[in-house]
Length: 127
Image (tube, rainbow, N blue to C red; front, top):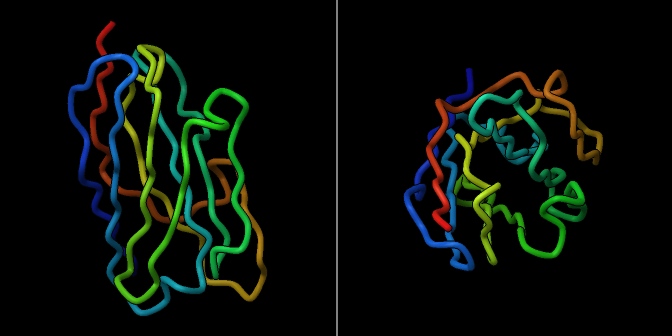
């Protein structure tokens, strides 16, 4: 069983930066792809970023490309999302997610690919 705990959310002005972190329990973290998703107010959960096992591949949607980066530290069982040049439309609850352990190096962007989820953390960007 994998448990994920997010940290680092909060309130920031437009143009500012925040760094979210997710700490995972369990010994299989390094074999899982990791993702960040978000749920804006009144909308469905959407993909924000993903990183493959080993960290060699990352994927971002166009809405955050060039502003967000994702990284992982397998020694510490953590994955981070650095968010720069934040916009009010980035306001959302952000969720960390992990796939089942795998030998594949893939970076899924679909909610259904992830079997483990954190509780979510609020990010609010004021204009």
